[in-house]
Image (cartoon, rainbow, N blue to C red; front, side, top):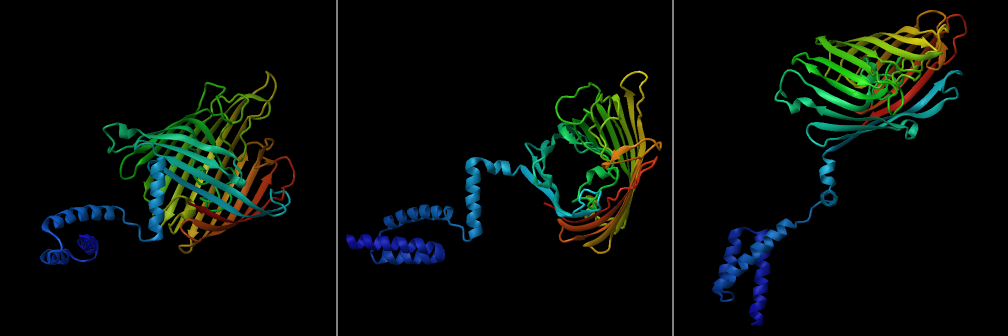
Length: 439
């Protein structure tokens, strides 16, 4: 009896291994030989086949990963499933950008002793709760410290709630704190996405809380548009005035390489508060004003030579070259503190022309000429921390794309300030050398 049980055990092991390592026909031959020699009965064979099928199924289900990477993936999947992150991670997207480098300016500049800096660092989170909405949040980590949450808003694809989702137009909404849609530079005015480390002299833009509707009209060359209502005042929290700012923007490709856009902004009555939108770094009311309104009108144009597939961000453009420009007008209409007391409203213009030429796929040269000016020689303002009535910037530089995400950039900015009635032009030219990356 013991011998038979031993033979039965050995046969079971042999058959189990054979079912994995050899063909089905070989296993059947072995079984028939065992039955012929009287070592096992037909009933025992049937029972063994059933047990082998069960064990084989378990072995297949519990087969261990063959590589270290596979084992790590199994463990990660198991951990994510246990805490519910397997569902969240598929809906949470993370991206960011950063720039580090060396800056050296003349004696009146910000880096008169030469300085290593981390001037740009952002972390961008997008959460997709469903196929209609997305929540966006961006952390400002400039200079390697936490500064603020500069984006926090909800985007909704309204067309997916209608029967016309595949129609010739699109419509979405945005509510929360986000960037005002004024001009073109505002979407690349950072060291990573811009062609140069510096921006234009005016650098119009800012963040505010509000509600925006945006979309396109048409199929082949769609007309882009946005309409936005915002608080208008700087800072966070409740608005102090029921009048909201209004911002309208439209964009269109007149023909394939030629793109134009126009923007209009009206802040509404800001009282004595600063504007959420700055021009040349200025957002404060004119001196002595108890209420004021900022209005901005801007037009932009861009032409690509041998237009590529990647147009934005500009630093990653793969056209042979492009040239673009902007011209804007602003009017800060201020009321005096008391009847009979004078207060000067601000009125001025700004603009820039910039170009990028791709010498090779990796190496490019770029330049920009920009200015912001006040009307009237007696009017001055602290443009870019320099009190003047005309601020000009001449920028020339180059970039080398180490990869599709990382670029070496260098530039030299010549800053020229004129104070109207008199005063010397301060020495504040700037040399910049950075490495910028997005992920």
